[in-house]
Image (cartoon, rainbow, N blue to C red):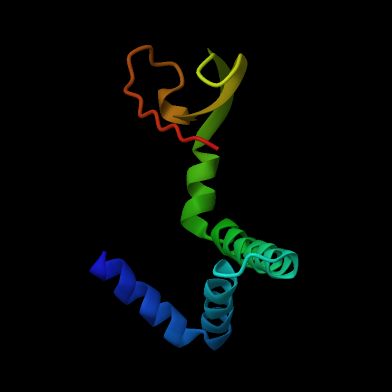
Length: 110
């Protein structure tokens, strides 16, 4: 946690705009009126858009994406009503024809 906090601090020092945005988001988190909520959503979307753009421009990310295939499946559930949960499966291309391969499954709600 302290390493993450240090990295975050360095990032904020290097980008006054990012620090200003994060400070404003923290302020807005404590307010519960419609105008503040709308501004919070707007700023969050801007921050997410910048982050996604940065990730998609990363050579390592693009290389990894080129080396995998993505398929989907659904898993039925009834814990909170009857519905199918979509599951994305990412498989390294060099393991596509393997029948015995390990899997890591991560699921979260909402």
